[in-house]
Length: 379
Image 1: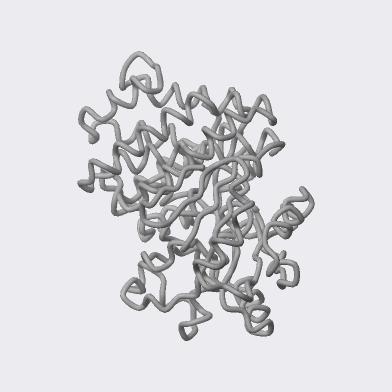
Image 2 (image 1 turned 135 degrees about the vertical axis):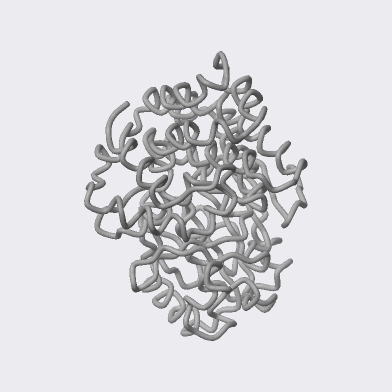
């Protein structure tokens, strides 16, 4: 088993879940709230986790996490946390349960309302170290939330905002690739493209951090080399392990900041009635943003092109679009059910998103509107 200490402590290995009792003890969690969703329970993964530690057998379970976590769900989970006199959280699932658990951990020790802690509203300085401890157990290979410092929550007023602080990084991450075996092909593809997009956007971010860039490139290579194998073979353990590491590495580089893909996918994900998958949104938007940024990324595009295996930097957007199509993911926003009527509002929201600041090329609302309009149609 590999023990990694980079931002947090990470167990990474098949069967890593079996040492969960040690992680609970290390964080002094005796009465955890388990945060998960119905899909994880239906897949039988909760039952496996409950067997891993005695204190989980009687732990309360919050399983009503929406696909894009909401402030309303945070309040419901927080009520359960307080009713159970809990002293920590175990987040089991994809990015949604993990993000929701982070928000609960914040409000369990900080006064409401949640909005005051949003990054774009000056919330970074308001989040203190007095956050309830969280253990994150990813069951998909995509978001990197298990080592990320952010939680994305859709507020009651419809805004999907980022809550960002090093204090929100889970105290332990348990990365067991066996928990992703049998993940459906479409979800494997969408979450895998999320990981790949993280690696690309953090690498292209203008912030100076060569170690993070090296991690991002390693994650990108792993993701590109294994995503089609993972999609095509749900029981391919080597491919599943490689994709989980690619997702982890994408999360380890979040400190560099993301870019225009996420500045757009965040507000799009805030439309609860559309139920848009974050990873699929990133997959659709990535080629269009790569075209927009090309002249502003210097020689970094040449390095990306070599790793993608395409001829030149000019071919990079098309190569990524071809990968998305081969994976069977949507190739346009219209195919995902995004109506043209929301383009202007999403463009305005993207300018305000925290990921906008670290895109290599500055964008206006008009720029975002043009990207969205291009992404509405099939290539």
